[in-house]
Length: 454
Image (tube, rainbow, N blue to C red; front, side, top):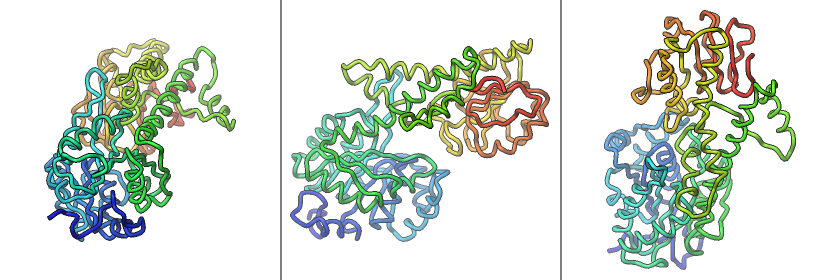
């Protein structure tokens, strides 16, 4: 007996949209979400809240074990802990380690696994391929597969679709495939998924687009924008990230002119942004996270078309940690001091305030380069729970006054840093990477990236 004998499929059926929509929200069409990380778990939770019939798959047994107890392993997401607890208690959401097990019961399959880059900056789609194989081996007629993982354009059509065909023995038309770009930020995932802005969907055929649109109209209150092709939808998320990377690279390059121009470049940026045609971002010590630093390589490497602008933007942003350390070195020299043997506080190690994530964070190279200069690096982060990847000595926020520091580098301005009592330190050299400090009335020598010496 097929898993669809007692319910309607979302794809490839003559049933009306309203009937398919009702079957979806009533839980008659079971959903599986593959990848229960920082983005995947909130997505699965929203699906569970809407349908009451979701299974999540993650190969990490600790993640699955926590979820079986009704506990979220994702920190810093308002409302997620309570929602997961309620869904598990109600039987609306369960977690398994084996993606094939999840696929065997589901009719809607949502893939939101990591897609990173390897040591050569080549896109690494190995996890996506493996999950696609697991889904394909359990695929039934009428199933719909939706990819939310950010991928190089054409991946859904040229990688995922052939795998699904081969593993299932079916042809397109017997099952559907669509792409819906994940447009979610850490710290506000539930809000974003539920409707901070419209969702975008595109399928390999018209029916896939229609079916995906039906689903996301129930998930997202801001509506759904269908595209003409699945590759267009893939490109949307990529282009959003590339815009930000290039924009940040521009302001980082402008910030390098601060001292030579003798002006506050940040002030000039702020004034320029009063024009309706300008939206310059803010300079900083680097670009981190699991998105922006990786996305340019999804175009640079898989395709023959040259992308010199994207490559240059990456070089500029990747070079900002070195620029930050160099500025500290110069400020020490200006005071007739040496960075060698200086004690330096690195404030904020995660890539964003309030988010326990260090992937591609600029703090990693900053700490390493400070140590290479001979500095005694003290690592301070009230959010991070694992300091193993960093060069230096972990110190608690309450311990920083006992370190007798010579300098501080503000990399990630966590809210907890607002309570630092700067007057308790002897004169410091401070590099403010995020325009987050107001130390003009103190004895400290402060250099702000983009503004110069305060």
